[in-house]
Amino acid sequence: MAEAGNDDGRCVRLSAERARALLADVDTLLFDCDGVLWRGEAAVPGAPEALSALRARGKRLGFITNNSSKTRAAYADKLRRLGFGGPAGSGAGLEVFGTAYCTALYLRQRLVGAPTPKAFVLGSPALAAELEAVGIASVGVGPEPLQGDGPGDWLTSPLEPDVRAVVVGFDPHFSYAKLTRALRHLQQPGCLLVGTNLDNRLPLENGRFIAGTGCLVRAVEMAAQRQADIIGKPSRFIFDCVSQEYGINPERTVMVGDRLDTDILLGVTCGLKTILTLTGVSTLDDVKRNQESDCVLTKQMVPDFYVNSIADLLPALQG
Image (cartoon, rainbow, N blue to C red; front, side):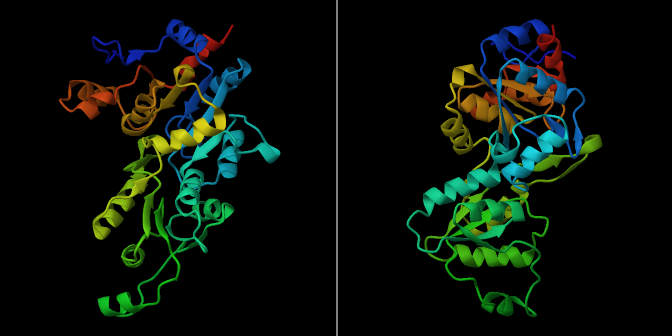
């Protein structure tokens, strides 16, 4: 496959020789999960072996995911189940920084001092569980039918009191009823609007995709006529969560991901080395378009290196 690199030397194919040199200067590797380590419930071939080899070399691994549908512990279980290793028992999940967990940290900061912090959640039970683990009650998870025969009824149905934030994550039960209720809460003074991420689609097996959380966040933003505070990549907040717990040196850290607009942009923004893997969303054609763009922000969405799969790291780790 041809390289997408240009005169500045970015987006160079990561050969075994280059990988050995890179890894010699790196202590920590941060991985996206969906589209990088696995697609759906299937591990990317060779990916578990690559991570096992990195662990054997003493590299510290972290997993930064925009997916809000699992708790840290559930993600740790999936990592172990698919062969990626990681701590078990009381330490399970300490390597994982998902948007459900980091959203809870964000709201704990923003709602400090609130006597009864509560959030209306368009999202999963996992997102609600992470909020509740830091003392923030949640309402709204699960299906919600429209009540009554028309707009007058929809606007007079009782609202849960003391809701101080609307949180939008991945919600397979997203509906007009929920959108209307979210808007009503957001019309209350001081109610925050928080989105876990702006991913427009999620990669599954066999090259298939489903609509991502960003589609839902945009719907709520449009209805409320305000922008959400975004927690996930490329927001710096999620990296700050990792940095505070890991004590990261950005110059000795690599971000590995499959999306230019989230993973790679986060790495560039935070001063990390970056590797794009071609097993998920973004392609080398996307890289080339970004390199040739007249937009300064778009031109930043170019990785230092690319691999066809993170299994390409194995030759540099063997022997």
